[in-house]
Image (cartoon, rainbow, N blue to C red; front, side, top):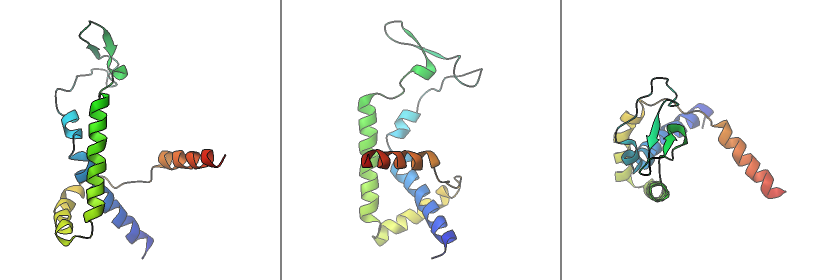
Length: 128
């Protein structure tokens, strides 16, 4: 298979997996709600006042608690597992084709060099 074909297939598969295994999860619940307005653009002008009256800069506020994070990760892992377990099922693949149109509107993916560097660092640390 040509490198261009491998890249095209990997890009399409990545976008579909992101859409149906990550985007359409509890992440949507976290994304829903009122978004704060920033006049500066970097949210340094936005603060949160908690129930004790403490003022917390927006960029310092945790936007997801431990329970929500655990639920989100469980959701994502279950969906990725389901995706991999059903990838050869013809009816599942037909369903994926329907998502292809929507995911094709997304930007094309690029290699994440920071991710590759982190993986390489982990590998080097394990060998040391």
